[in-house]
Length: 218
Image (tube, rainbow, N blue to C red):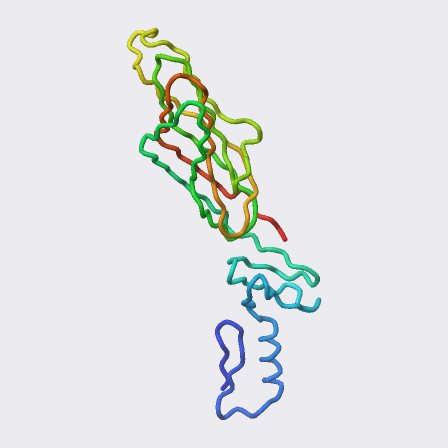
């Protein structure tokens, strides 16, 4: 007596069953309806006809899955990515008038193209005894993505003008926004600009949180 496979229901005739060509035709039809993922790279996608609409490919170089519509490829949206970075620059001193750019991460890897939302907060410190300011922006792949609005901290309180106030004032500066990112490695950087006050500013640390908020549908 014939049995059947668990997943596709392919017929497995027993040794005493008569030979029926229809059994083979039914099995081939079942296999044709379940072709599975086609493995390729982004540069070796197959050229399919309209009859293969609905079949998917997996690109080994990008990790992306695409669905064939019969005429074009549409990316199957995957789970969004999220990253969290804490950069401790050991209380780095930045001189007046300096414009350093600090690297948050050189190789943020995304399996899909799309857009990210970022929040970047830095802890900065300066003596209260004189006037100074520092600006912070945000760059993705060396392009400014703070939308023209940098964050700023300013110190203008003389020493001892507030009872019990410390001589060194710590402030938090936050910049946020969105940016497109590419498949593969992307760099995140923070440009700083220190004013021309008398003393240097200390960057204590920078914390950055990044979310993938949308993936493209290609």
